[in-house]
Image (cartoon, rainbow, N blue to C red; front, side, top):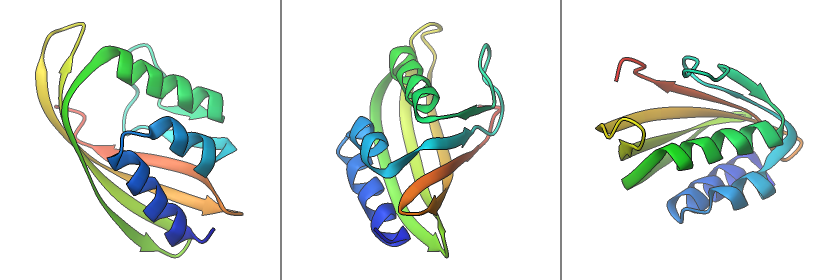
Length: 123
C-alpha cells in the first residue's frame, strides 16, 4: 500500500471505531508511539505493537467517549497527519473535557512505523 492508501484506510477505520483492526493491519510490529508529554505513570515513548496496543487499552479503560471525530489525512511524502477531536469523561476523576490533537504518522515498507501526537497538554 502507498502512504496515501494507508492514510485513507487509517482514517476510515478510526471513523468506524475499528482502532484494533487499524493496529493489526496498518502498523509495523516495531512501531514507535510518542505522546506530547508523559502521562502520569506512563512513558512518553513506547516501542512495539504490544506496547501501543496496551496504551490504547489504557485509554479506553480510563475514558468514556461521548463523541469523536477524525479529519484528514493530509499527506507529505512518507508521512501524513490526521486530526482527532474527542468529548470524553475521565473515569477516575469524573472530569468531562473536550480534546483536540493531531497525529503525525510515518510509513516505511507499507506499514506505519512511527506515530507522534501533538496536543495542548495543559487541558
